[in-house]
Amino acid sequence: MEGQLKNGTILTSESGNKYEVISLLGAGGQGEVYDVKCGGNHYALKWYFKGSATERQKKILETIIAKGSPDESFLWPMELIVPAKSDLYGYIMPL
Image (cartoon, rainbow, N blue to C red; front, side, top):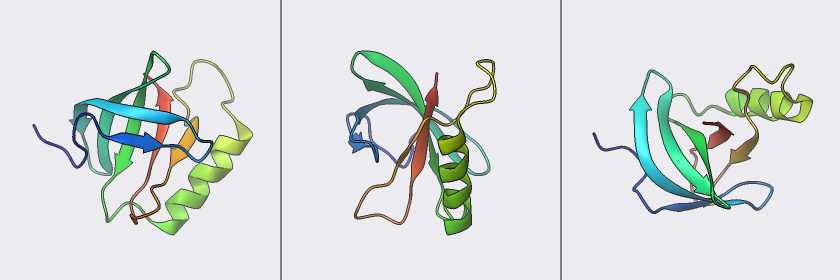
């Protein structure tokens, strides 16, 4: 299965963390989920498809990231990945 992002691609989060795409884990209706690595740790990256990467969805993500997870049992968005030369985006969460 091939995804939108190639293995080895480096993406920088809004906070400056660099994530390397390791592999595509799966895809669904809104986008794809990748195994990514940063600082020796693995995380999940949800990367939205064009039709799902709306400005409204991005604002919702920004709000819930700022609030933080209500409990450790949630796989909660940690930070956004918004490349400068793309209208697509994604977010990092625990793997």
